[in-house]
Image (cartoon, rainbow, N blue to C red):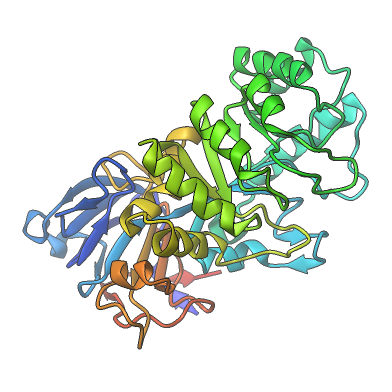
Length: 405
């Protein structure tokens, strides 16, 4: 198909007539703004329709009263190369996730790389290669932050310094390699913090051959930055242990689609009781034995909003602003200076709710009608969600038109 898709170096966009603007900010999740001005792939101004001269913009998008939200962030994926996963022998899974509103992905380890090396030199080489590869290539425009080594016994401080200097900024799930003891993990977490590398720890039972049980004592001793899939990937810790992690740790609590759904709901409820919903972030843990779930993030939002007594606008923050803050990203919030990554949504046709938020509250999925990354339209009507009741309209396009891939 053909769509106006100017280079981000000069394109100006006015997005007007927004019905509901979800900010991604858990302290102020809904804005009364009705328009956004974008220049060169960045948000410049958030305001009202009258604030902008649409005639002077290169592109004008009329939301027709529908919902605008930040692009969704999947905090836990296992990519390999490009848009291919050997785990499911599947091509195009990242493009499908784009159709589910995901604009950014965070690797929890390139775990399924065929013949994945476990020697220290190979671990570092694979991490650097993955970091470079996904930095240079965005599948369907999705930003995949990759190069997350699975740490192994025998790694020393110099190895983490070398990886950091090479551009590696996170490690994969601690516990998927040979490092499983709390004291060993804690030492590597400390080295990572010294060199600006973010850490995630596997939580729960074994997920692949070679992994092991990581219980609450190991998680607490390791003190990693992110408690990876706190609801299990797939097998959860007992709920009593999950509660203890919520209460005794101050680190991010990651709820994933490919985990225990009961524990996901109970964790969100407990976080609400503890007044620490700002710590909750979302991932899919895909691709796994369960497959790749293109709608995994939006489904988890709907799950928590409908069953965990979490307001839907707050649940959206789990997959946007909360994750952006934890992962130190320039997206995830609709505010000046942030990347112009957006999802345009509305209630699904023939759904029970009168509005998008009402439909999510009763457990329905939104209809996604457009996805934008860095001010460029990457997807129009989603091929995977139910159709939106109302669609935005591109009322003005630049003169230059290129093929949307």
